[in-house]
Image: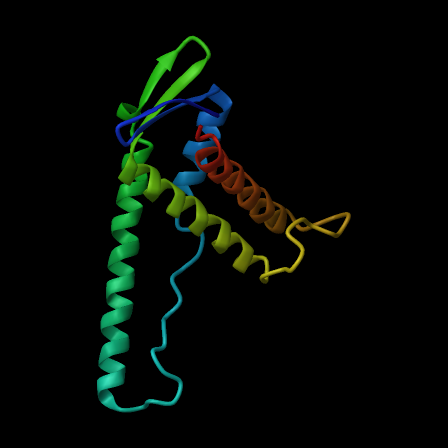
Length: 153
């Protein structure tokens, strides 16, 4: 994946066909894990605090549903154009930021599913297939984040 053109808040990236397939597969995995309920305060037990927590959790759940819709729109075929070497992906600034947010959420979700390890690479010679899937997804999401961020001139 490489940046082909950037102008006026628009980015065009060229992806090899296998990269495009991987990116589509990763984005379809969003969200990786369930949204955990958020506590506003550990000590405040009054009813208003419970109401605020409920509103916050409902808002976070709605945001995640909207982000899932946006994620699926980002991988819509209209975002891609076939070229000789693969596909061009066209994103405006908001879409690019959203894709970065989704990829980061996937990485963090995988890291949490793995038990929040300090070492970011598997240290066991043999790992469970489910763990391997999380490690792989985390690495691939990181690859695409890096390509989106570090390809700027």
